[in-house]
Amino acid sequence: MAAEDRDLSTRMSAEAQNNVKKNAGMLFKRHKVEISSAIKTPFPFLELLRDRGFITNEKYKESRENMKQIPLQEVVYDILSDLEKTFDLPLLNALFSKVHMEKYPALSCSFRIFKNEIPNIKDFLESDAEENEGRSDVQQSLEQGPGETSYPKLLGSIPHSLTYIEISSEDSEERRNREESPKASTSAVKRKPDTVNPENNSTPEKAKRKKCTACESVDFQAELLPVTCKTKTSGLLIKRKLERGATRKCIRTEDGNWFTPREFEVRGGNEKANNWKTSLICGGKTLKRLMELGYIHAPPTTKKVENSGKCEICQDGGKLFRCHTCPKAFHEGCHLPPVRTNRNWKCTFCTIGNTPSQPHDRESEVLVKHVGPEEELKCEFLLLHVYGPLESKVFPNIPHENYAEEASRCLEKLRKLDTIKDSLLKGAYPSVGSFVQAMDEFFTLPRCSDAEFTKDNFKKNFRKHFAIQETN
Image (cartoon, rainbow, N blue to C red; front, side, top):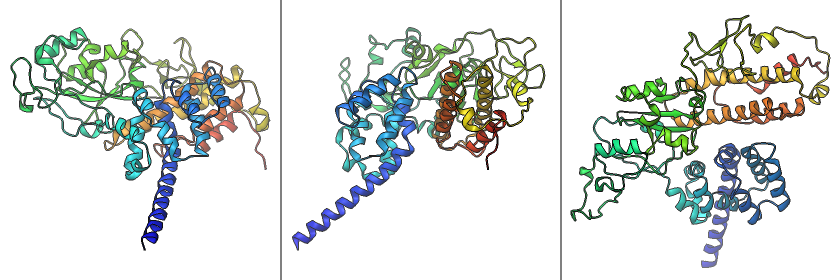
């Protein structure tokens, strides 16, 4: 009877492991983009996979060589796509190993997805991933000072841990100005609950704490960052929007309104400061400090010029260039190719869209064509059609519920498009076919909304503007 029980237990254990492996494999396939995006440096990712036997030394050398031609995240995605074919649970042990979780904090987001979807997955993984992921969990309770605005629904999906610091208002202002932690002031010393204050030999109580600041473990590499201004208001900073200019409305508050950094500074009650880089705080650091550390690209320095209307692509205001043959207006960087002059300028929609041509080439002939000036302009025209709906219809209209998660997915797609755009402008695509292949890979990413431009729409436009003959 005991032997039968052991056999049954073994069969159930094997079946459970197979189910976990199957579900984990599906999650791995679905989240390869997120995992790839979390890898910011080739070391130790490539070396660990090679040393543990997941990739060969030849694949390691090939990947290192490919990094000279294409972005690291695309190289990582290719490796993960190969590993998907032979997926097994030990691969997750490697991906979420202690050394990876410490080097790539954004991986905690992906690991949390695996934990939430497969609650018993930790029974089949090594302990170090579980321990490391735990360090990034958001504390569930947050002590807030008077007048602070919480942002629970939007910030809940952003991985960061909180460290309690008791600070006086004077220390807080001084810290912002000096951009360093106040070591000398005992009122600003980091303490754990129930520890003794060496100055008065008393145990600090939570009730005596004046503020709680989120610091140290915010994932500053994430696309969305939680920001506050004088603790009076909080919001989500969209890095990609800020990088395009400080006059862009790049901060979203919990009520769904959008603000420029300066407008957010004023809303936070700091209108006299007029220096949003030091007024806006993320994870205990000013945005100025995050720019110095390289986590945020400083927006371009331009004269404040406001035009009436909105950009055709992103629907933001700011400095716009108007086409002289149609009512459309664009930001310099939103248009393709980037606008260099405002004199008698014609947009790409007018240049390509109004130039019909009779089908005369086979698709196979077009795909092997060298990307010359004419082909590049047509590729840029196709990209604009994909950017438009994603930038103007999908991203601004994401529902409040689960905003951070949905917005992050949308931003990942836009970053992927940015990579394709940059490669096109740098002449990195030797043939039309290589550009089309990059777009095919883009369309494998999950859709964020029905308003997006589909692969079928893209193919239809491609055949039309490259004058491709229909085949029977």
